Each structure stands twice: as C-alpha cells, then as structure tokens.
Length: 323
Image (tube, rainbow, N blue to C red; front, side):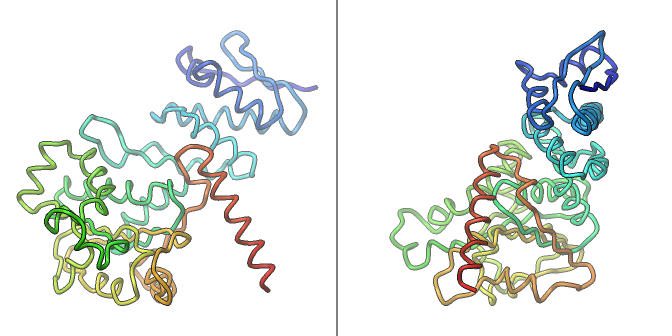
C-alpha cells in the first residue's frame, strides 16, 4: 500500500471536497479504488499506484474548480473523476470559471464540462454554430444564455427562438385555442429558459415589445433577421428545405445557433433530416462551426448518461449485424 498527501487550503474547501454525507469523497474512492481520509487539515489518499495518483489529481482538480466558484455537485465530481480516469485531466484546465450570464435570481450560468466550454467559445467566435448532441448536454440552455448575454451587451437588438412543430401537422387544427395556444406546447422549453434568464416581468415586457420572439419555424419564412440572436432548436426535425430557409434568413449583425439530436429524429418517412444534411454541406465553411457533444457532457441525472451509452451500444451492434 502507498499513500499521497493532498494539501487543502481551509476548512471550507475541505467541507466542499467531502460534500454532503461525504458523498463526493465516496465517489472518488469508488472510481479509483482508494481510501481518502482527513489528517490535520489535509487529505491522505491510501491505495495502490497508479490509483492514488489519479485520485490525487482528481481531488486537486476539484479544489481548483471550487476556487473558481464551481459548486462541487454530484455531476461535477463524477465528471472530473471520469476525465482523470480517461487520461484527460489536462483538458479540465479549460474550465476557467468564467460565467456566461446571470439568471434573474442571480445564479451564474457556467459551462460545466469541457465540451460545453468549447461550445460557448465557438458561439463567441462564429456567426453560425451547429450544436449536435444527446439530451441533457445544455445545447439549448447555453445558447439561450449566450443570446441573453449578447442582448445585455447591446450586440443584438432582438432574441428570436424557434423550433419545428413536427408533431402538429394537420392535427394542429384539432387543438383548442388560437394559433398561439396551439403551438405554445412545442415552444415551452424555450419559454422556460428565457423566463429563468430574464424573470417574469422583464420577459413579459420584452415579449410585448417584440424584443423577444418565440415562434414556430414556419413563421420565419420570407423574413430577413437583422441585429438578432436567432436559435433554432430541435433542428433534427427540420426538412432540407426548412433548414435552408432558416439559414438564409440571416441578416446583418446577427448570430445563429442551431441545436439538435440526430438520434431523435421524428420526421415521417421518407423525409430526411435537414440537420443531418446541413452538417455535411456546411462543414469547412469559414465562420460556421459544428460542435458535437458526447455523453460526458450530459449534466442531468447519471442514468441519462447510462441510457445514452446503452442505446449507442445497442445501435452499434444492430449496425454490425446488418453489415
């Protein structure tokens, strides 16, 4: 057996590292098959090499994130431990603690994974960004945060969010209410994100003034969108014609973010996903970035990661069987 001492700055940092009911340390111990104990204000890691070295790196990385203002949540601890175990600890230095924006309640919106940080950087540095990845990776939420940031910094004058109402079709007419009532259920996730960022009163006022617009994709046809931050959500359910129509709405001093999960396509056969086609067509064009999230970027419950990996494994096996 070997051991490593990991110095800890103060009692608050020590408390954050251990977490509620020592849950954080328990995850580190399980991931690296070591024992972690507190000794004189420091942490002693006991076990076999190279396990204790990996656990020490994970603990130091968590301390750095804590110093930057990151809460050491269950997800953060699990993510850091998996990155270190995979030999990607150096990538964690990209998480510099910078926030994107403040919500109406004062919460700082920060990227929580390296993939999310790279996504944010691509939105900063490109006019059009396509964010592709599984559910729970923050594709839409972070895009909305960046839109709010751009608006507050007076870089754009409007925030426009849209998504296709694929499930509606002719059934839309059978739903109660006017057109807005019919499409609102499809736009609810976008409303929720904006509501959190701006708060109820500001959100309502901006909606009335047309500063914020949340509308079905069909409403974009025939328009030129200047000085706007435009987000197309659930783009995997657009047709080739729809996504081309959307892309060509781009006006002067505007930005676009297109998000989607190409494993969740709901289009009826034989229609093809416009997002899948756009990724191929737009690849390599200057000022257009394509960002791919992985299951490591999922910030929901751990089971969401496990479900995504299980489906990927199942689909890979089915593909091999058909070859």
